[in-house]
Image: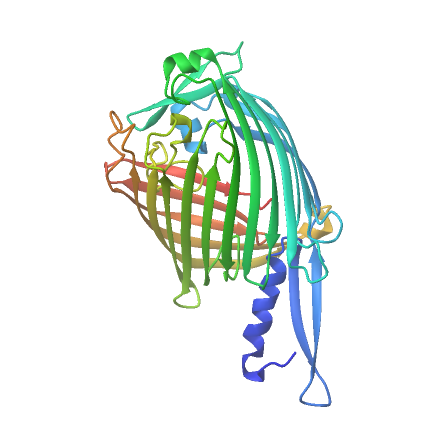
Length: 413
């Protein structure tokens, strides 16, 4: 390659982070060795592979998040799922991954998936496939006062869901990825759920099945994927549910997101995240498909105990991150696995501000947080270990005057 000597150090650092973002290394260094010919360098790359097989005992909560389980369900251990979650990273040496999950307890889930990002010599084509079956004795059947109402019967499965999907990915360059997916879903619920809410699938239907197609484009220029400090990411997704005439759901959705990260000083950074989704045609959806804010990663901090359903939503989040600790610890023979004997640990102070809006024209009665602007803010401490494992401890407020302590964990696999 031909490189400008003046920009060599940041160029090597960018490529070191690209190696780390593959998710198969716990450490990577790139050093340059000058030659007698001053116009040439030899680059030495040193890598420490991560532990690839993670047969993790599964112990997780059946609720939307930790705080809902802790405060609203009194930390009940009956609402816990257990089993085993197996992740095999770099299965064949091509950064491919095999995942299997056997989950028992409060709800059951059986999953198998395989992802390989490079199928051809140019490493531009990839694929992913997966199948899952879930069932649960409890199901949220309605939203009132922006909180989910649940029905539970330990003798009867309230929901049975089968899903299968396959994706083809195309990566023409380092930063951009296109994916084309086909998915099939088949969901059944109990008679009691339909009696409690005839609009669960609309018109008192007990079953929903549909074949879907999804296109996603992502351009990712972030420096550190698990906890970015500089760069940007843009993503667009178009989904159409109901390719076949006899499908029970015909729904289109367009999602767009843009994240920007600014390094203001050596230790201070600013994160901004924008996301929006619209649904069409503009008609009443089944309650089951009417989720907006409060599910997954789309939420306003301070509103973790609530949901705001709807056809559409918009979300804007900002956070300042101030690094107060950065050190590597050598754990030595205390840790039997060599890959984890060196523990990089970083600690950040965070100041957060979120604003969001969910448009719900059909189920808004009795849910005052829909169709209004939601605002939340707070402060927290973020801990990043082993590059890709994060723990976020946050105290947040909302514009209702409520506050609470919230915990978010990302294990990195």
